[in-house]
Length: 313
Image (cartoon, rainbow, N blue to C red; front, side, top):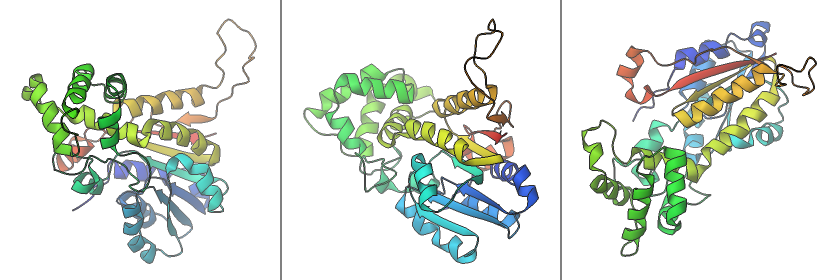
């Protein structure tokens, strides 16, 4: 199994060209270590004065990081933790301000291809979907216990699923006779009831699985928190690079970027600023950066990715 980092060259170039890095020593935080591809290239492409501190909430990712730690014992460290708690994690690590922050929000290939994690509808496994298998509520508990209205909201709000209500009603009806325990239980139910998807390249269960994963792991809430805390911990001239994989994440990152780069939000008719707002960062990627044709051909999972970057003023 090979994990292929997305937008690798673009993200590394942005993180290794900031004002602070040109001065010498720097600390870059990879808050979503995953398969470790970004961390490895950051270490390879930078001088010995650059250190990388990584976090991941998935225990399997922390185990994988041991090899990189052995290669760069003085420059790399990987600790368990949810990036939503970035401020606390940095305090615990004895870090003050940092010079770079990478957030690669998507799932790693390891998580998708490990059937026992329950992330993919393409293989049989328990309906789990927790990034940290030792905490939180598995997807099966949501699917089998949430009422119809709640399920509809989850599928609509986090998956933008047009058949949200119909799928929720079907789940509630079916689970009265048999609980939905596995990925195939849920995927088969959706396949049978959404014939309109048969002609589409997208699997009929794609949006529902996305919605459940986001809900189970509070992914949007975690992203909101790390954007704010990350900006607060970046030193002047420090850079934040965020790679998102679906429209909900990307819209959130885009709105945050616009807000912190705009400063004053007073109505235009007010002659003097009364909101106290100030520009906190400048946008480095005006329209976002997307993978080129060659990368998409090499790694089809990258097709939906969008990179946005900020530099603290």
